[in-house]
Image 1: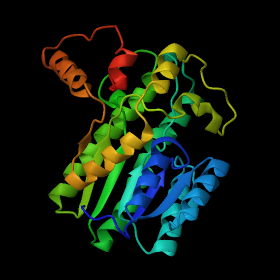
Image 2: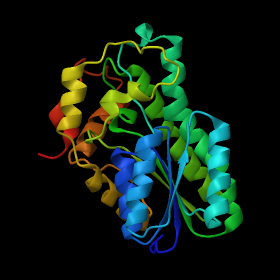
Image 3: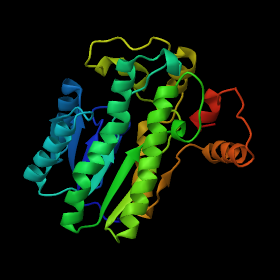
Image 4: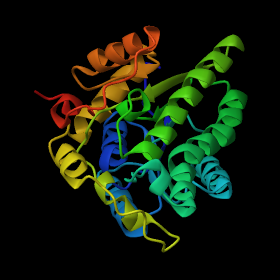
Length: 282
């Protein structure tokens, strides 16, 4: 997809972070945007800001863990703009703790948002895109944590490895049918978002296992790439039709190191990747 003007982008997790930055860039490209997020007030604020710029923007309060919410999001998108050309499955949360210490509620929450949210998006929007026959593209937000592992973020990594597998499978499945839909999977390191404060959006009122390694996660986020940089990287990736989007410098070295360990049947080092290596902005 080369020309974004007058195309329609649906963005989950659009009220802040990468999602909001991508919405801003999409509007710069002349796109109509549908903003989906579970945080009502920030969502309406984002819609107002874009509308003040003259953009055609629609806010739809959405819990991506619920399939019915994604179906309603699609219905409101079609009703307002008549179609969809870019789907950015971006909503995500983070959760600390060792795997055996996370509760069932913890797992339900993070799997529901990070993995089922992407599954619902693909399930609902791919048939719409196929029926349109227009050139379309889907971007799924995974993480470097979907390509390499580290301790104490196991539940988060399980969801992101799942998004990577889903995206690869989607790429193959659409390709073998000659589909008009492109696929990208975004695997960033640290980005300046609020993901280290994800529990603010937890609706079950059950406190998550409070075992964040705050020095690792919060410090990493604070020193990460700016969301605007990631948004530009995504747009370039869509134009180039790239499956893999690794916006952080040095990411390829971490991936190659892990691949070599697997190929040589070596146990991984027990040391997690450093914050600096996942910031990618040295």
